Length: 163
Ligand code: GDP
Ligand code: MG
Image (tube, rainbow, N blue to C red; front, side, top):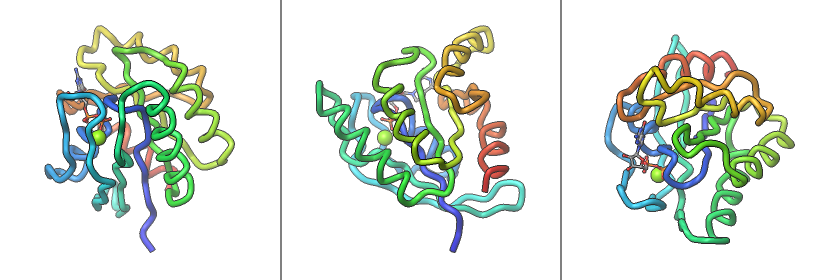
């Protein structure tokens, strides 16, 4: 079977936006309101001659209080089960959060390859915002912008390297 890549992260970090850019179509639902992804969506992509399935693990995200962590934890566990490689997406504008650290612990314990993608680095002048994410323990974070489409080729290089 095809290798599976899952995108995991808190609500509103830009998972569906990046998923859409990677599959080159607008199948996933992107909402301006935080925490609205209706479905778990699968696509297929190819990079550097490797074909893989990609999963937008949004699920039903409820962006309120304890519900956030419950849904993010559940999607991380699903991703750990089914993915060969995990893209752990964080928000470079919001910075590192407690929820990010909790997801990181789950992912770390799984032993699966994890690539940290720092989204919303919309301006090359904001590259410094990636540094705090080294503390997550997954090596070099990759700066990306779903709005501008920058950094996605670097991200995919790292992802397929691990497949
Ligand atoms: P998800 O909940 O993680 O799937 O996040 P979405 O893809 O639905 O995006 C959440 C919000 O962040 C939407 O308003 C997007 O337009 C916005 N967004 C996504 N990527 C970027 C980015 O690179 N820069 C900025 N400034 N906003 C972004
Ligand atoms: Mg989403």
